Image (tube, rainbow, N blue to C red; front, side, top):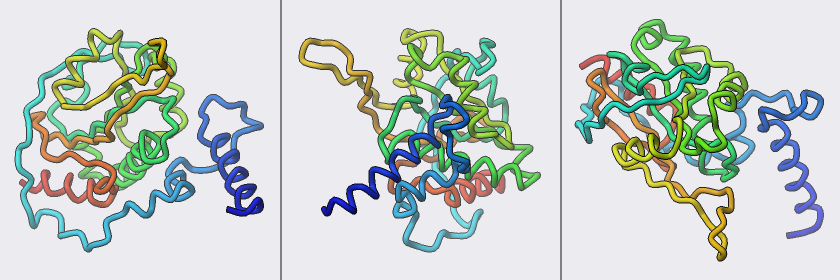
Length: 234
């Protein structure tokens, strides 16, 4: 890698870091739509390289039946996961806001923002779909922090950013959704501040059953929206 190439990469990274930091001072924040973050990182390479089947032309099997769990909404109000969802369809993703892994939480947030825009633009979807972003880092991602992240994305549909009151409440949710998360620690046992986790986004039907699980290779907004329309057509 030449020095010129390295300099360009560092420049792009610094500009993106400023844009992506929702609590950065306004004078340091780049005016960029968060839905564009994936393209700066090269997330477009993860878009399906095949033609999607028409919505409603296929069926999605029931994968699992998670239970309801207590959460805290971004205004600090105690809720439950299914209480927020109601009888609607839901797209649920697990993140921690300090994540800087390109194919991790920033990627899933950028995809959900595209889903948010598509849902808001379709009255039928808007009345039957909710999005829920849940942090698995309650120590740092309190309700105030999740409210900051929510403002950064400017939701146009019913998109909740939630956390839990602590790891005791978080653990059963992660177990129920089979969402692997582990703290990376230094040799002395001190937490590095980084999580090892598998990117998963879950599609829930009106009965709160998991009907699809998306990971990096298959997490695409168009696919998620087609799956939502497929479930509505059932």
